[in-house]
Length: 253
Length: 151
Image 1 (cartoon, rainbow over the protein chains, first blue to last red):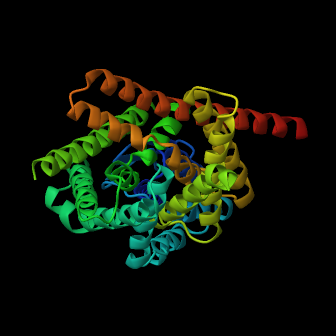
Image 2 (spheres, each protein chain N blue to C red):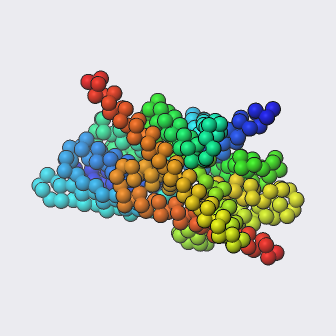
Image 3 (cartoon, rainbow over the protein chains, first blue to last red):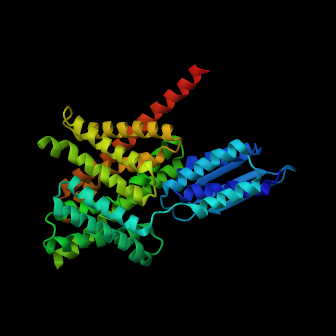
């Protein structure tokens, strides 16, 4: 049994799962099931947001461990589904480790992505639909969509200036969108600055980390559950601060 | 006409916004429609429970329970993680407006209103968590029970 190859395979699977936004218990459970399916009964895994550690004893009793840091995660639910399906398939069929690793690498290379224009359309749609959802009119919806696009622009080109820190990125995006909303209302395109701002802000709202946090707490992962809760509170604070700063600026002008 | 404006349109907005989030989170194919349907269903339940409840928390609870049951069901049918549908469908219920108004009140120095809004935001977030937790625990219990009786 190639324990080194197996260890690499399972850590890579765990990394891909975590990168696409899986909950911690899903990462731990998938890796453990994979190791067991390949006959490593004493495998151990410990995962927290941003880090995976897997340890297993080779047949001569020598312990083998691999630790992997995972970068700040974006949410890619399609990739998550594919990883999950591949994990199930590997557990059932247990193909040779090398072949399994190739399959896993293929998954990363072939992952279907939306064209950037489709993603931009997504930002526009969220802003445009949430604005009337919160009580705006037709022109307000258009402005909400445009503010959504402003968030896309800020995320793509301005946020890297703020470094890897999620807090400042969110703050910057929120400020840009709020400024755009005030400008559009000032120019007479939209009418209600409140609903437009809220509609566009829904893009930044920490719904994902909130849902993840609560599912993790439910599964008993208190460490990651609490850290995701803190993340969602910080994101909400960043949104409020960014919008507040932009409102203050807009009031001055 | 009023019926359309009050009941159907908000659900359509919720549906469309969820489709937008599907584009952001890279959900393809029929999954998009399922997520959108979940968002619309959640808001419909929220609106309907407004008929029999004056306060918002029971309404958010009912909506979260409905969305979770729907997502668990769809995930069973399509044999994929329930997370994808749950995350997107819950998003329209997340209190984005509350965050904004809390900020407005604190900016204008109205501490009373600021604290009240902030507490409502935390209450809604907690209620959503509780509803989803409750529903998925019940589903899990039910499935374990069904498996055991089948054997």
